[in-house]
Image 1 (spheres, rainbow, N blue to C red):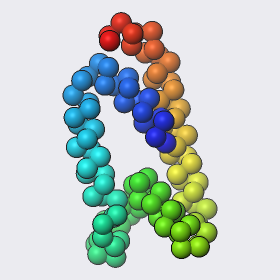
Image 2: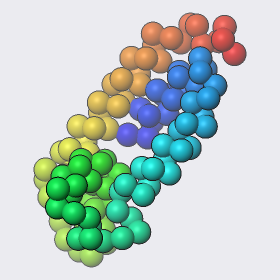
Image 3: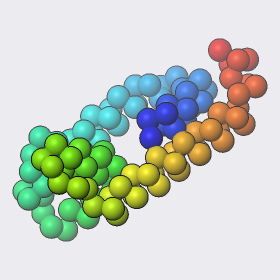
Length: 106
């Protein structure tokens, strides 16, 4: 997941230099939207579905379950795998398309 996002950001940051600044703001919002610092039960029920679609929340939930000795649900693991392979595929595709022009832009 991280490698795919890194490839996408490498291409975008080469052409748009403000992406680095926007990405740091996006990471901060993603951090607070992933229920790391507060329990999920305090989030209203109408927003819990949106939180559960956050891949960072799913990854942290799987990690917490593994630490507590509980096997993570297969749907969560499949969702994380699908998200990781999708971002990796998009990242490789973008990087291959723009790889020859990236050196010229630097």
